[in-house]
Image (cartoon, rainbow, N blue to C red; front, side, top):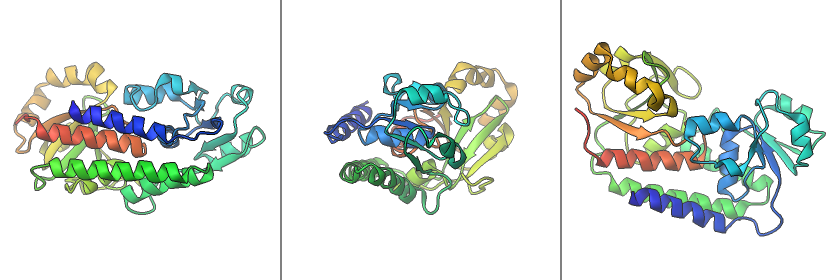
Length: 287
């Protein structure tokens, strides 16, 4: 609990450094960019598929009042966007940005796929957005605070020897497992831990595996409790003889972490994941 309170206080500290001049009016189709803007003190007025984002994160990183939903990322409500007279339109879809460029100046930016190590890419992405909006000082502050917080969390970890495995169920038979090239791996590295999952089936290090493969995988297994998991997958797994047999035969430990972050997000989600991971490491685990 103290960790979460401290993290909240850090976010309030970040907000104290928000721009003092008239607040920028920004629309974005990119969730990682939306998170970054909020951390820099510029809450987007509109975000594409905001309700989907809230569904995945439990509405923890970007609050409802921080923006309105302007529809699909590929086909946003142009009339609604125009009515807000934004100062900038920011996103990762260059074709879409060409279509909306008549409404306001556009900024084409994307965090994925990573060009180098994940943590360095997250920091660079923060500065890339900040420099476009004359918020470099704010970026320096939030990244310094983030690095400081990760250093504190790293020192709290007593056992760094056991490799860890991060998984998220997509249904009661399959799970996503996170290898390299994503923010979760970047945080794992920064905390001095080892990611047990080597295969990287995609540019974001994401592999889809069946539950038998997941149960046999080595390392301390951490299951992300996404809203979908809490709603119906957990109940299905608990009543599954196959899963119960498989999980009971695992040699490694099993822990659970809240899914109150976006796995393909930016600095705010990375920090939330770090807090949850370290907190779970300190708790008793299921054999």
